[in-house]
Structures are given as C-alpha cells and as structure tokens.
Amino acid sequence: MSDYKEMWSSLGLDLETHDAVLNLVGKTYQDVFLSQNNRPKGMEYFDFVVSEIHGLRIKELLDAKAEGRKIVGTFCVFVPEEIVLAVNAICVGLCAGAELGFEAAEEYIPRNTCSLIKSAFGFKLAKVCPYIEATDLIVGENTCDGKKKAYEAYGNIVDNLYIMDIPQMKSEAGRALLKSEYKKFADKLEEITGVKLTVENLKKGIETVNNKRKAILRLANLRAANPVPISGLDVLLANQVYFYDNPERFTASVNAICDELEQRIEKGEGVFPKDAPRILLSGCPMAIPNWKIPNIIETSGAIVVGEEMCTGERGSQKLTNDNANTVDQLLDNIVDRYFQIDCAVFTPNQTRYEHIKEMAKKYKADGVLHYSLQFCQPYQIEAISVEKNLEKEGIPVLNIETDYSQEDIGQLKTRIEAFIERLKK
Ligand code: BJ8
Image (cartoon, rainbow, N blue to C red):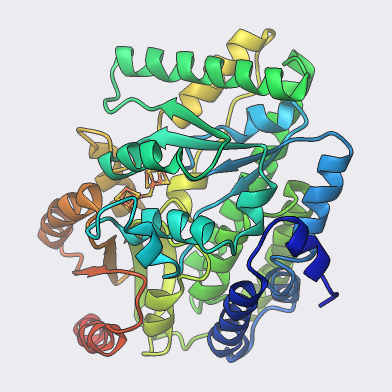
C-alpha cells in the first residue's frame, strides 16, 4: 500500500490506533478470505479494494472533494443514493463492524446499545475512520429507537449531522412522510452542492444505482446453482463494498465475477461439495469487518447461499422505475422503491417473512440462520416469529444473538455445528 500517513493526519486520525485497526482488519482478512479455496479470479478486485479501503478510496474521495464534489455519509439503506448521485455528490456507508472505542462511546450512549450504533460512536471518538472525517454531510435516520436517540448524542461529536425522519408504518400517511423527507433531503443536497435536481440528472442517478443493484442481484441469483459457484463470505464482502466503492467500477467488477461464475456453473464447478448444507442468513446488517457468523458456517462444512439483510437482498432487491417526465414523478418512483424495504422497524412487517420464505425456496436453503445483534429489539422480536413461521413450514431455523466481540466464537461454533448436523438429516 502507498504511504497515506499524510492524508490520514490531515483528516485528524489517530495514526497509532488507526495502524492497529488496519493491521487487525488485514490479519482477519487474510485468515477469513485468503485462506478459502477455489475463489473466483474476479475476487482479486475485492481483495485490492479491502487492502486499500482506507487508502486509495479515501484519496479518490478527497480528490473529488477538491473538485468541488460533496461526500454524504449514511448509516441506512433508506438514504436514497439516486438523489445523492443526481447532484453530483458521493454516497458512502459509515457503519462499522468492529468493537472499537466502546468505552468512550459509553460516555454518550448506554452500555446496552447494539454494537452497530456503538461502533459509529467508537470509530469517531477513537479517530480511526477516514470516511467519517471525509464527509460533508452525515445522514442519521429515525429508524429504530436506538439509532433515533443515539443521533441526538451523535450531534455532539460531529458537526455535520442531518436527520431524516422515516415512517414506522406502510400506510398512506407513512408514504407521504417519506416523500416529504426525501424532498427535504433533496433541498438540503441542492443547498450544499449548488446543483439543482433535473429530470436528466435524477434519471442518470437512478440508472447508476439500478445498474449496481442489477449486478449484485445477478450475483445473488447465481447461488441457486448446486454446487454453489462462490462462497457466502465472498458475496457478503461484495455486498459490504457496495456501500463504499465507485458505483460504476463496482458494477463492472461484480458483472465480471458473474461472467466467470456462469462458466463455472456450466462446467458444474463449485466451491463446496454438492451435498454441503445450504444456509440462508437473515437479520441485522453485517458491516466490514463483521464476518464472524458466515466464517463459522463456512468453516463448519455448510455454505451461505443468501442474505436477507441490508448488506444483502433487503437492501438491493427492488429497482427504481425511471419512467417519468418530471422531477416530482421521479421522486415518487424513488419513494415507491424505498417504501418496500422491509426493515424490522416497520409494523406490521409481513413482507419480510414472505421474502425470507421466497429466498429460502429460490436458493434451495436447507435452513435459515437468523442473526440479531444484542440489544436490537426490532430484529430480536421478529426473530421469534420468523422461527415459528418457518419451522411450521418445515424450514429449520437457528436464532443467534451476538455482538462484535470474539469471545462467544466457541459457543457459537458449537450451536452452528449442531444446527448443520440437523440440516444433514
Ligand atoms: S433499513 S436494518 S440499515 S435501520 S442493529 S441500529 S435496527 S438496534 S441497522 Fe438498519 Fe436501516 Fe433497518 Fe437496514 Fe437499530 Fe437493530 Fe442496532 Fe440496527
């Protein structure tokens, strides 16, 4: 990697702690990803992206800023990237998947807050995230109670926080709220970028994001094959990088992997034996470097064939219709697309159960592993009905509750291995 120390210093990072984080991610990546057999050649692109995750991509963002473009940081798939791209800004995901700076975070939020929220505070307070430091605007969304209240405190540690309200019900009033929030967000973006939304730039933004979604869904669909041509870990990684990378380059790289996988499928080649149990993951999002559960599954003889998560098909499943003649109609189309996201913060949330069942069938999953972060009430509560509903239909479910620590790996491995044994019967 080139020497980015000056760049990181200019962003105010704590170089010593930051070095330790990069070393840890590099070591974990080596152990988890590079030790896999028979990876598609196209994954070399993602190896490179991860090796440069705080280097080249940050340099690209800073170069874009120098040209006058704005960087918008997000924590949720409800933030419409189409609008961000339309005003020539860049969208980057800020969620982190590692336990860092939690002690400092607990001065602002209670100990019993989920790891995803805590890491947003931890990474800022420990000064180790160049993405946070590169942003011109950070969007906090009122989704779960944890995030909603935590953003009040987050406003004390960052000076560019923008709050977007999100409905809790899929009602007419809920849809109207989302439309008015997207309009307000568009106004804010126009104000900070000086670029007005037009039919042309909004259609272009929609096209770019749709292409990215089509590519990642194409990759997902190829996993219905038996044997599966790519590991769940590698696909999760692509889903995670989805939130950071240059969208056009990402789309081209994922499509190149798909071309390779189609050839593998034709030849009947896979990464796991044909009789390996197939597991669908469902639940909370997994941000980099949260690879704990899929790594346990795939080192225990089973394979992950799908992710019903925001770092997966919950986030990417629907396309935005670009068939409209005015900015307002296009905004309506964007609202229609996002309003279908079945996050557990919605009540009721019936379509999520249906989506899990549909995915289990499509990817021929032998069982579903439901993953909730500790202290995440929306997903923990839904986990109970997911389990009851699916078991009733003969789909075995394992409910796992965990956090970002590594201390429970032994215990999780025992439970996951027992589940895999059950799937073999
Ligand atoms: S659309 S899943 S990205 S809100 S894990 S912070 S829910 S207590 S992340 Fe999410 Fe948007 Fe929904 Fe997706 Fe709260 Fe749970 Fe923590 Fe969570």
